Image (cartoon, rainbow, N blue to C red; front, side, top):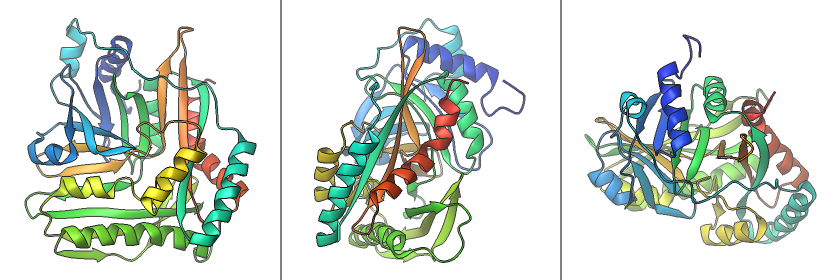
Length: 359
């Protein structure tokens, strides 16, 4: 590692030891921060989202699954870099493993085309994801490359036996809760086009985005006293950009309940939620596991949660290499074109593919 590296040599050694010995750990960097935080624990626990917000302590890192947003796995801040490097620690092997099969393009286009026909009739939205399975470099190397490309995102590398090993860099804030004034910040992030595109956003992307904004506003109005939505703007993410609106809420009494209701949002699931979840189950041939769930961090000033996006699930093979399952999805509506949706997932996954690839 170089001196300018986000991940110091000592932290890299600790992470590699945790991966080798299956010790639960997390390495993360908050948006615009130039240093990563690391901690590990032998005492991970599973709690509800409400318990995490009410009784969590600074340093607790939370991970939820896509299909279980009301609960999370917590990695407490128990073990430092020195504790890991000097200790004779061992954990439990992962209970799940990456698949070796990527999503087939022809099958994806066929299934998405059928969905588009359905959604022209009911004006709904479903986020369909695909999976890219590929051999890759060490997760520490992949994370170092990936983190450096997206310094305005929440970047993370973590492992628990229940979740397996994940790396990601998400642009999407789900909840930033300030307990001092019971306020909450979130965002509506949906709609995708090439970075620097000229002109106004097209109707398909605006409609896709508005589904998310309306969903978030409705839930917040039911749970708090005051909600405001800022003007939309284009948020850059590598070679693509997203339509984004920042949303603020005041008078929050139960942030854990709000997170449980917000996740998964129409940005990663669709709307109506129950119908979208059924369509996802019928359309996708892979399990999402943590993809589309949320990640949480607690410090003394706030509790922040991010949507687990632009991410990969990794596993070590007996051959001495890693297999990555890289996830990418797109919002499908009645105005979608199946081949264009495939191209969008290619663009979303491209940076992570390059960072994981063995050159």
